[in-house]
Length: 294
Ligand SMILES: Nc1ncnc2c1ncn2[C@@H]1O[C@H](COP(=O)(O)OP(=O)(O)O)[C@@H](O)[C@H]1O
Ligand code: SF4
Ligand SMILES: [Mg+2]
Image 1: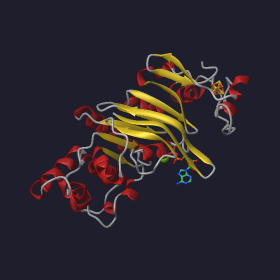
Image 2: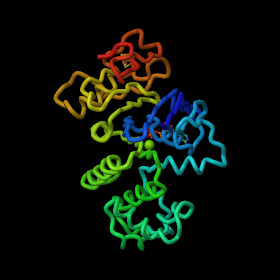
Image 3: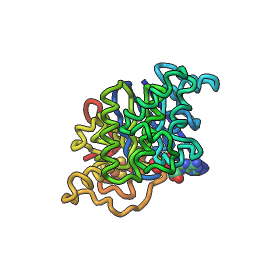
Image 4: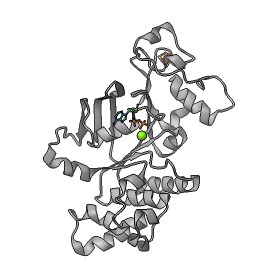
């Protein structure tokens, strides 16, 4: 299990992540949904040890302390795919060399070309693309190369930080189907991060909803219609029931510094909301942080 526990991160005066705990089991896909600026990337970067948390722990299969020396071993098990593959692939390297680099430490020379072919096939790319440079292929192909590179070391966990943003709908659909197929064929733990609730519920079994750096609700994706937090409800009704006008959160009045961060735009706010809400259990595997849930 990959576990981030009670994680905090502040950049100057911005509290980007506030006391977030999140668990990913091998073989399951977990969704993390939240709007831009809610702290998704900061959280993902802390979980894969690219940036240190101010407080909190990352535990991988029971092991919490990872020293500088074995962080490479950690990265063999935990890989991340970023939103902007253009920025994360070295423009001076061919696709072949991009995929060969992670293999260099783990696989014999004889088998590399075979493995690269296999990796490209797993993301629906032909081997002849391996001679090209990142700028010579499309955005969707680049993102698939980034996925192939993450798969190269046979990781146990894959963190996908908005992997479909900036791609056209057909390409998004193609890559989403690929990720679903990859998740079905190998016992990965996948954290799928998106601002798009519909995408997250499609790919994941469990869902965490992030608002202003805090998880406000956790539930099974199949029960998304039973969401109780006003913020999750607003996302849900916006996508699945646009004809309903129960939740009027269209006007963004900002984020409250104290108490519930959502209270300035919440239609359910009560005087108690000036105090920080605690987790309340709604049902099996379902909790929300709210004083007055639906
Ligand atoms: N390196 C940084 N320096 C300063 N502020 C940052 C940095 N990275 C992120 N932030 C701020 O932290 C908050 C969360 O950002 P981020 O984790 O990128 O959110 P998301 O991925 O959900 O869009 C935002 O307010 C953002 O401006
Ligand atoms: S705690 Fe209060 S302000 Fe926050 S979401 Fe719940 S009802 Fe709305
Ligand atoms: Mg982000």
